[in-house]
Image (cartoon, rainbow, N blue to C red; front, side, top):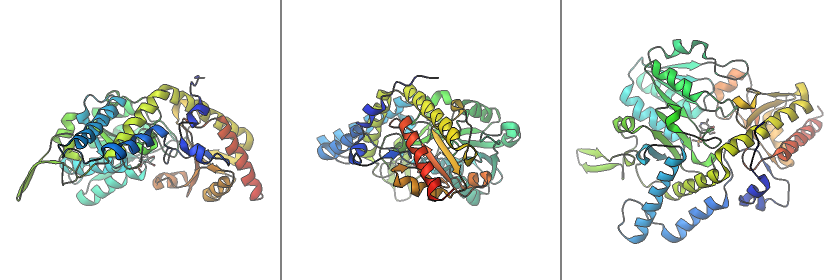
Length: 412
Ligand SMILES: Cc1ncc(COP(=O)(O)O)c(C=O)c1O
């Protein structure tokens, strides 16, 4: 078993929310929806607002230049965090949903025609389905889906067939419901062998493990800031410079142009070509500091820690509840993340979540923005616990105790 070097008690001191709830039980198990924020990120954003706020790329006075330097400095920082070869490859959006819409509308409209195929998987979040369904309505493209195995992995048995003639393969690096970690490099290679580009939704991956975008083999790779200790309101899209250069702008307006006349415009160069209007300046600065914090904890330590806590959760829940509890997705921690969706005693996930809340245990209940996957699993909703740097085995015990009470409460 990997040894985790994270000191959870010390880490919790970095997160003011634990202090704010110190007088009652507070077991936050919903990082997959959004992580908590460390003091360092909150302070960086406050300091920016208090000392150097001005719009970026415009003013020539001192604080405007300082704001631009901090914003562009954070871009370089975030680029280093995922090993981008240049900050020109790092585009800011408001979340990964917008990053994937950018891909569909910019790359898709420029490269796809009626009848062209795009391959997705049945475990995608709506953010990686709906933009393509919209393109299907707009252009008449064909969508094909990689199915799932009984234990919640991708069924790759007919991938060659699905990729045959396809123009793009867009898939999640890690499922927000099943926890499944997909073999990104191998899938990207398969896409390329078939002549398709590889697009990765890494919302549930980048916060939890060391990421090297170049090593993934992906062409376009998006994620979201608020699940990795950063603020809400900022997402990222990474892409190789050549591909991004060839893609037309997505949104039009200020900042994304070099020149505008009454009858046309000249787009700006990368990365600003894709950043129309005033960007999320404080949020990008906060996200840069989130990268510092994650590296201070150590991405390998984070992965090892999550494997340990997740393994403990699987063993504990299985031992305590046996057949009364079903965990969706693979059960071995090597091929899953710290996202744990489950069904319990036939109860509705919302009832579970509500009773758990009375014990201060915060879990997500619902379809997790993955309705096609819910249909595939034959359920309307699941309860989902997810673990991060501030969770430990005591949180798992609190979850199990609260589940026990939940069963008692409903007389089951
Ligand atoms: C796999 C996956 N993709 C996309 C998203 C959408 O993230 P956002 O709402 O930040 O755009 C999520 C968030 O739940 C997710 O888990």
